[in-house]
Length: 226
Image (cartoon, rainbow, N blue to C red; front, side, top):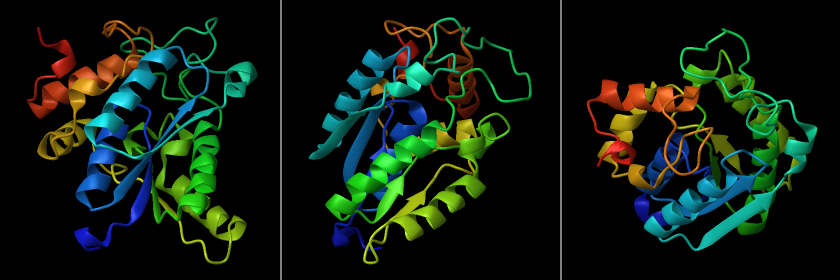
């Protein structure tokens, strides 16, 4: 599309590295951004919300929505929402679905985005899923997004034309870092740690993925400077 078209796209923005780069991609493609953040009772909820507002400010976003689905914490079943379940640490890759998986979370998030998108007249919903995570996370696969798009077509107004896209889905973590660097994504405003809200723990699986991604990309992580 032409950058002057000023079409609207909703970006699911957790405040993490992947969602921030996803927002940068949407902006680079010429979309006016509408940013959606969802609180679901995650351990680092307060810190992620700070990142959301800071990134929204960086991109001067007018349309912002913070949704509350803390019932996912009440449902439980994830280390991100249940303090009784240990957050996966470095090197703890079982090959199955990790303890950090929040059951069916992305479907809840995308559903909210579709509802909001119908009201705003959005054309796209961008989500920062990565197939590299797919062996563990079933809702981070291309097949999953296509199924969601089929559901959206069936469950919205006839004139609604919203499509969910995962622009990072085929990229590796280092490629995501390089792309974000090229697009001037504000990595310094992001938060990836699953366990702490003051400084990255550097011991959880998410910190490990982020650290190795920046190292392999040959770029210094601004959160670890100084």
